[in-house]
Length: 233
Ligand code: CA
Image (cartoon, rainbow, N blue to C red; front, side, top):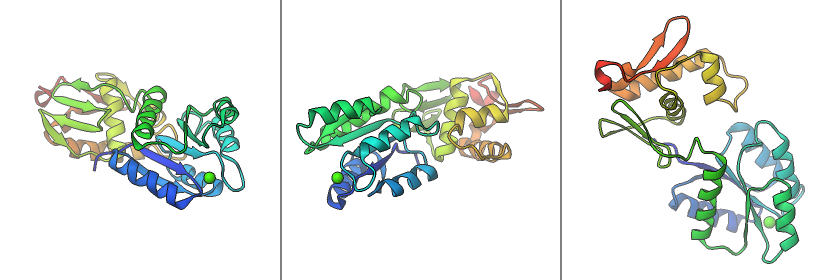
């Protein structure tokens, strides 16, 4: 399965949340809905989304205070936040941006506007997940569409293998230690052991098929992606 950008929808009105989720799915996004701040926090702790759609008016903790809180946390500070506000609430919008939201969208909004604004915040905030294609040897990875090709044949990568390959391709021919890879690829997960890297490298090699030899083990040092192999050309 290819990795679709994952959006956390924090919205207490089920009908609106469902409508947004359906629209996002059709727009090429994966989404998960949280109807209150506690559920939203639990979702964030479990899986870091690519962006958060955050309703202003929530029961309990408001969207504004959630945005402020998430901006201060090292784990969530770089996740783009798009706030949903009521029509014409100009002071709200300013306060939302002050609290660290990347953008806001006024209800009711069109699907096209929502998708366009989401893509825009993703482009601005996470240039590594939405950027141009990278090519190394016969490998081509397009981060914008989350697709990977070897000699023009599409490869099926899991989300972690995709991120790992993306990083290795952007820093090809260099050797990366396991701890450096954990830091750069798994950056948001603190409690992962170094051997996890080995597991994902193994899966990545399998997924790459004949291009798997391009991922080299450098004894005592780590891993390197190289185009300087027979199969890399
Ligand atoms: Ca609401």
